[in-house]
Image 1: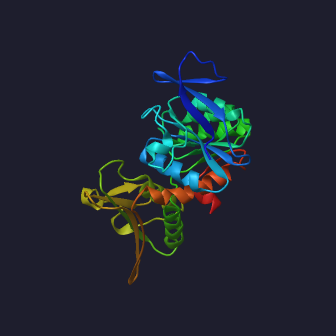
Image 2: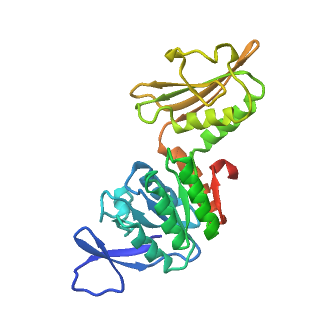
Image 3: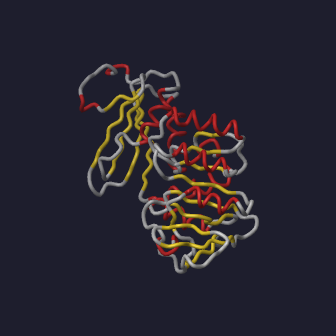
Length: 301
């Protein structure tokens, strides 16, 4: 299924195409299955990148065509992912070189971006220049970056999906919370995490933002309290987020609603990165039909 057949060679050889990786060269020749979506994983050495490689390899109608990262350069991505056999696709730290190699096959290509908010615009711009769509899962991406990407994709008539979350369970939680918000006037969000990174989480912030944009006013009785133990208010409508951090806790988000005589809660737990893979595969299948930017995987559920 490998999109590139790659082997180390000496500089004295003269193949059709040479890719410089660290201190050795890699010869790449397209050997792809016709009709498959060629997927490039940018951020392939990360935990989520390795999970994506395995998920794409197992999915019908698509295959891994390139692996980009600044770590483990030159290592076979199949070996890095502990696959039974190497994919014969080395990790390369040059996205442009990989895009150029894949674009020669003139097959449908998708770049999955797991990198950084600072680099995501340039990455999508490069993919667009080579006629490839992008799926962007980069937490904390700024609204102005999304706006700039939208203008870029609109001008190029090229699809891009920016996904604040790839977790279908998280999206279902958000949709359930929105439905419940029309029936309750008190709401608070409690999340648990094993590490104190990125608090409040993207998921909790997204839910609070969605609820605040509905025009409802929540928690009227204590909306103006400044007591820090009451959590952080997100938005202008009194939606509080409480973050509980303890080593060993799963990543969990619970939205509590209350009304006269009852309490309603919806909860979603994430045990590992595998929960993002069904959403990623769905995103790849959908983005190839887009000619503009779409924000949020929920548009396709």
